[in-house]
Image (cartoon, rainbow, N blue to C red; front, side):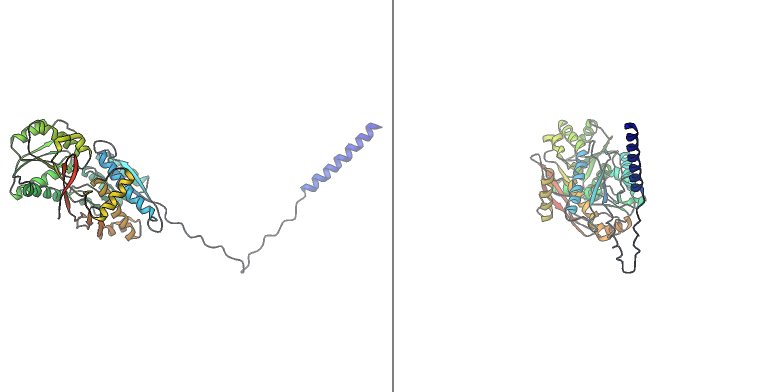
Length: 402
C-alpha cells in the first residue's frame, strides 16, 4: 500500500514538472518592429576621418664608415617632424611619421632601402640620402614613382639632373670647389696646389675636379692630381708623389675618415703646407682620427653653429637639448631639407607627388643654412662658409656669397 501511494506521488510530480516545462517553452508574443515614418530622425552622417599619418622616408648611412653623417641626418629630419607634429601636424592635423633605411654608404643597399620604403611603408616623400653615389642610385627609382626627393648633402651636379622630382638643400660641387679655390688663392695666397681623392666616389672626384679647374682659372698651378682606391688606408705612395712636386696646399675632397688618415701620413712624410677640403670633413671624428695633424686645416661648409642669425641659434638650442650635442652641418641641412618638404606639402595642400614637386619648385624658404630658392636644375642658390680646425674644434672663418 505504501509502495502504491509512493508511486502515485511520483506520477503527480512528474506531470507537474512536464506542465512547467511546456509552459516555459511556449513562444512569447513577438514585439512589433516600429515602422519608420517621415517624422523619424535620420542618422547624422559621419565625417570622414583625416587621411591618416603622412609617411616620410629617409635613406641614410646609419652604419659603416660614414655613420656619423647618417645619424646627424636622421636626427635633423626627426627634429623637423617632431616640431611640426607638436604644432598640430599637417593638412588638418595629420601626424608625420619617419621611416628610415640604412644604405651603409653602398648604392645597392640604398636602392634596396628606398624600394622597401616605397612599397612597404608607402612614403610620400624622401629626405636623403647623404652621399652622391647613393643618391644617384635611389633618385631614378623615386623619379619613376613620381615621389619627390630632397637630398640634404649630395653635392654632385648629376644628382638633380636625374629628373624633375629630385631636389637638394646643399650647394653643388662646382660652387664648393670654386669657393675653396678662391679661398686658397686669395686668402691663403697659395699659387701651387695638389689634390688627392677617392676615385670610386662621385662626390670626391667631382669636388677635386671643380677645385682644380677653378684654381687654374685664378692663375694657380696644380702640381699633382692623384686618385686612391675606395677603402684604402695607406696613402703613402700617392702622398710621396704629390709632396715631391712641392705643393703649398693639399686639397683633400674625401670624407673625414680618410682625411684624418691622409693628414697624419702627410705630416709623417714631412709635408708642412695647408690642408683644404669640402663638407665631407664635417664630423667630430675628424679630430679624433687626425689629431693634431688636422690642426689648421680648412673646409668649405653649408652651416656654422656660431652663426648669430636667430633661426640658427634657435635650431642649435633645440637640437642640443634633444640630442645632447650641438648640430653639425649634416644635421642642419637635413633639418632644412625636411622643412622644405613640409612647407611644400602644406602649400600643395596634398601628399600627391606631382603637387609637392610643383610647390618645391616655387620655394622661397628661410632655412637654417640660408634662404633657399631653386634654380632651373633644382639646385639651391645660397652662400657657403669656411670652417677652420682650431684648438681641436671647428671655428667659423668666413662666409662666401654665390
